[in-house]
Amino acid sequence: MNINRIVLVITMILLLAACKGTQDEYSVMKGLLRQTFTETGELEAISSVALVMPRIRWEYGYEFKIIGMAENGKLVKLGDTVIRIDPSSIQKFIISKQESLESEKAA
Image 1 (tube, rainbow, N blue to C red):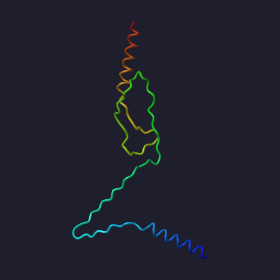
Image 2 (cartoon, rainbow, N blue to C red; image 1 turned 90 degrees about the vertical axis):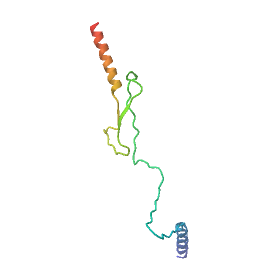
Image 3 (cartoon, rainbow, N blue to C red; image 1 turned 45 degrees about the vertical axis):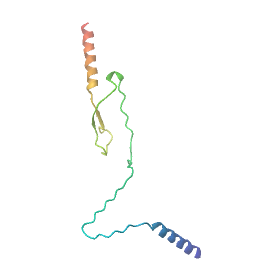
Image 4 (cartoon, helix red, strand yellow; image 1 turned 120 degrees about the vertical axis):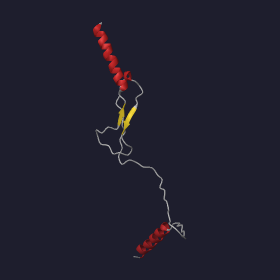
């Protein structure tokens, strides 16, 4: 029993020492008191997945223009559109191939 009491007293002393912190006290003489607290840190996603763009043949071009993205912080589900790329370079490629096909048919 004495050992339990000694451990309890030591634990309480340590807890009181750990809880003792510096507190700033200010007196408000007149008017409203406004106080601002700023928290800094880093946010982490609960669960995240790396997204990889599908491979597109080099014939379509190397640089693609992003024309739409999901809102920052939006929760997305499987199958949701996250990013949209301008399809004009691919459409140009298709048109040029169709023209080549038509010229080959004519020849």
